[in-house]
Image (cartoon, rainbow, N blue to C red; front, side, top):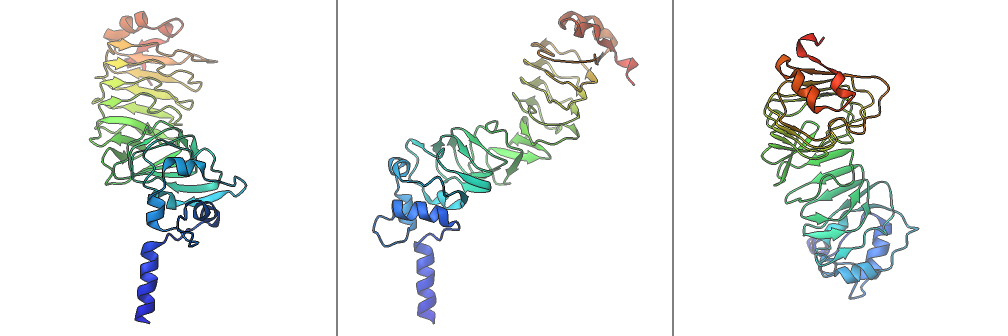
Length: 296
């Protein structure tokens, strides 16, 4: 009995046990180099990008769980062809913990643990350890950040830089929201695609990047210390009711560009800033400016 248990333990440490039979049907015939009908961890780790990309994959066999992809740790030189994989709804893949490049990877849940380049998309992006990825890619609906992730952290509905000073993006969620008070910069497209209804920017923020916008926004409240707002601020916000500027923004690039509206909204500013904002906004938005004292 003891010998049998040792043999089982040795086998478990040597050979990969696949959770998805269709993944196994792709991997074992393609990468079993000693032809023993099984794929060892060493065999998976030795697979090159060229070998992986040239392996035959039957696209009619849809995949559900490809966590074993993480064991292919030799795929760091070149672009891995993941575009060909067809995942079922709810499909899951874990990227190897190496710098890697992929092309058009589409999977419901993707776990990243190191540098990942290329186009990815899905519903949930999980960031762990040394994850380094363009988090704006793919417009994921949900972001999960492990507490040990070195580059990112999660506060409420927001993904921030690890030091919590840069707001990078948000989950897609409809609600009133106050941005985290540690944030100093709102980066490009950080809220684009979200469905927040009321957005309050705290006083610590000095910079707002491009495409600060959302189709469900009704109220946007800009803190007094914002100095610069980049292009496409509140563009195409069909539900907008009011925008509040609690200070004087020194530089605004193309506020309200491409806003298609059926009714005007109100722009509230301090009394001393009324003429300033009327001078920088294009018609008809310069006619929407009122004193913050009139705000209901």
